[in-house]
Amino acid sequence: MEELKIEKKQENGVLTVIPEGRIDNSSAPQLEAQIKDSLEGITKLVLEFEKVTYISSSGLRVLLNFHKSMEERDGELIVRKPAELVKGVFDVTGFSDVLTMEN
Image 1 (tube, helix red, strand yellow):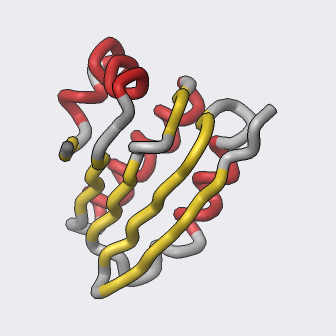
Image 2: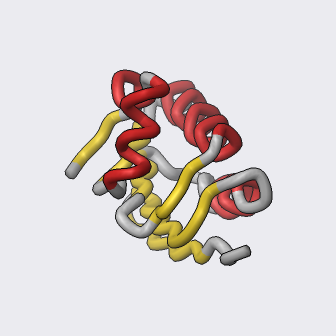
């Protein structure tokens, strides 16, 4: 089981999170905790998904929760450069219509 690596950058109210690997049942809580720990004062959450190889329903739930959380604080969540497989999951599940995507 490959471990999810998570890199974070914070600057001027923008938190950029760069996960690498699989976001599944075992790693989704880790991703959620890492983001939650850094959300204080954040108005824009950018998730760079270029190195995410897989996302499960647990990962999608984490994204949806942070999407709602950012909306509640008048912020925004952006998913940047999702890998082809992950983008396919977003398309099939309708997440492409809910989340803001950037290439």
